[in-house]
Length: 142
Image: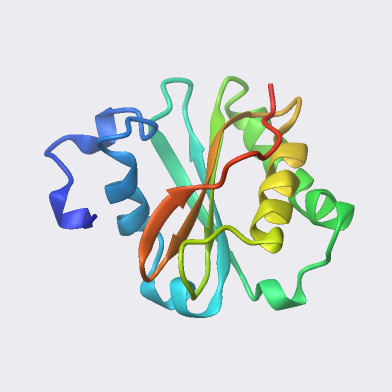
C-alpha cells in the first residue's frame, strides 16, 4: 500500500475499487492522524469518485455512544443536500495494529447511523501505521 502506486487518472475511478482503495486511503490519511487518531469521511459523487475528504481529529474529546452519530449528522446532512445521490466512506485512523477494537466498531456504527437516510455508506476502514483493513460487522446505511 502506497499512494505512489495510484494509477494515472485514479480520480476518475470509484474509490470502492478494491485495487484502488488501499492506495487512496494511504494518500488521504496522514501519518500524523495515524499516530494520534482521527476520523476521516471521504465524500463521493454518485459514481463513488472522491469529491472531498474531511478529517475530524482530537477524537479523545469526542462524545461517546449515540452522541457520536448526532455530532456527525449535520455534516452528512449538508453534503447530502449538495449531492443527494452521493456516498461516504469512513476511515478510522489510530496508532496500534490492525485488530479492530470495540471503539473502532463504535465509530463505524456512528458513521452508519449518521449516514442513514442521507448518504450511501460505502464502507468503513481502519487505517494505522501498519496498513488498512475494512471494519467488519458494522451497520450499513441504505
